[in-house]
Image (cartoon, rainbow, N blue to C red; front, side, top):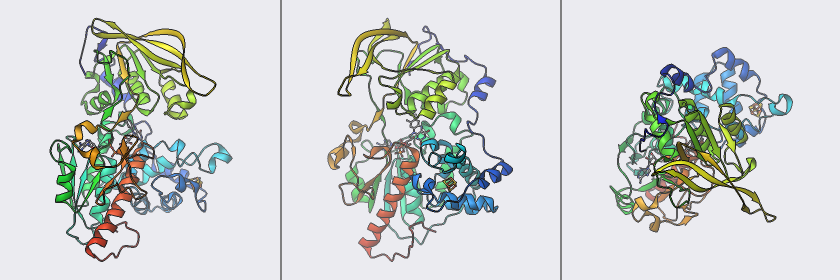
Length: 464
Ligand SMILES: Cc1cc2nc3c(=O)[nH]c(=O)nc-3n(C[C@H](O)[C@H](O)[C@H](O)COP(=O)(O)OP(=O)(O)OC[C@H]3O[C@@H](n4cnc5c(N)ncnc54)[C@H](O)[C@@H]3O)c2cc1C
Ligand code: SF4
């Protein structure tokens, strides 16, 4: 980001104490008595809808029952054997549209069992105290390259390592964790939990992490295919969509994901410059996160502008409400038309009002309005940065600009799997990426054992 202090952009809009309070834990953990009361609310449903709604299929009534019987370690084991990032997912999953949405308690009391908080209760003490619940099976001598260090890759690496394979993680960033480390809103994952969780995952052994190593720059897909027995691709979506106006490249127009990464890595958030008037263009989770975090850094007016209506926004109703109760305004049915400039710096945007025509197509009405801004955040989605990845795109079958995979997350190449945001299909959520990595690892294991006639003594592929 270019820092331009002559516009009203500056650090320290709030005191350090205010900023610390604003970025403290969004959903503080349950104390033990609260967890027991909450666990008692579960009906332990047969064919539990909450389990079906969980993308990683965690046995939710099973882990809640173990909390009730004071078996926290067993409860964590139930969670982590399906989702090794159960700790992070308990903090960041949009439970209101997943497990908690379908909880039968909703119909009786309009108040689901707080599954996310119970999951956090069960996993926190195990992860924070580094209590290792998994061990590697006998070494198979097989080597797998895993590209990327985010949830998809780490989940895949952990499952492969637990099954006895040797894994090399090649990660472009300086730290592992992917968007858990660089993207998730700071108040959802405090106290460096992302790295604590990565350490827990790597503690199983058999995983060699090489940071600062990028596909397309330091090695090619062909290199990996010749050097390793199998390859997993989990490089996410590093490219950001442009606003599509002629002059997108002026000062003050900032990629929201890049700013959030900077915020996540800042030792002292009060030193981070923020505008007095902030406009956010987009309607998804990234738009909500950059808007709320700007507000919490002390921006005076923060407005999310979206070209369609409330129902079409990528952010759930819960997230939209959260932004609004955090002091963010949301303006809908406005499409950015032209950046307003002072010199080479943005000072606002002219928008055109929009509506849906009789065929449901979005069209401009011809009426316009202008909104002022010191900073404009682009949050209109991301894409895979194929340009930075050499001939990777040519080697693989793609769908909608992402990698095409089958149900086992296998690509069009016989020895290459992929998962997470870089594949087509599925929602762009941490929990979905974790499930992709897990499914791919189970299939890679089958492939390696079949290929080399290795004995497969596994019952469920969990590596226990
Ligand atoms: C701002 C923001 C907020 C979000 N908030 C939430 C949330 O609250 N809850 C939720 O469930 N989801 C959230 N998401 C979505 C979630 O973070 C992603 O779906 C998830 O991280 C995808 O995991 P991944 O492993 O596929 O990719 P990523 O997490 O993006 O990881 C990709 C990894 O690949 C590496 N890499 C990239 N290119 C290369 C290369 N060429 N060579 C080697 N390595 C490479 C990167 O360094 C990174 O380590 C959010 C996303 C964003 C952008
Ligand atoms: S749906 Fe609700 S009540 Fe039923 S098992 Fe799941 S958490 Fe318990």
